[in-house]
Length: 141
Image (cartoon, one colour):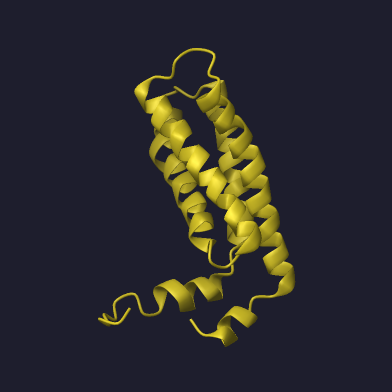
C-alpha cells in the first residue's frame, strides 16, 4: 500500500473512524472490563472467553485513535462477527420462536454497528491494502 492510497482516505473519514474506535473502546470496553474485573458471580467458561475477547478487542480499538488506517482490520472484525451473529444465531432463534429480550437488544446493537461500519470503513483502502493482491504470493511480503 503506497503513501498515495493512504492519502486518498479523507480527513473526515479518518475522524469518523476515530469516532467509531472511541465509541467501541468506551461502549464495549466499559462493560467488558467490568465483567472481567468484578463480575457479580464467577463467569462460566464461555462467558469468560467472550468477555476476555471483548476486553482485548475494545482495548485494541484505542490504537485506532492513533492509527485509524492500520486498525481497519478491527472494524472488519466487528462487521463480520456481528453479521455472523445475526445470520447464525439471531435468525435461527427467530425461526424457532426463541428470541429473548437480550437477543433483541443485541440485534439492535449489531444492526447499528453494521450500518456504521459499512458507511465508515474506507472500502477502497481495504481493497488496495488487503484484497487486491490477496492471491499473489510474494516471498518478500
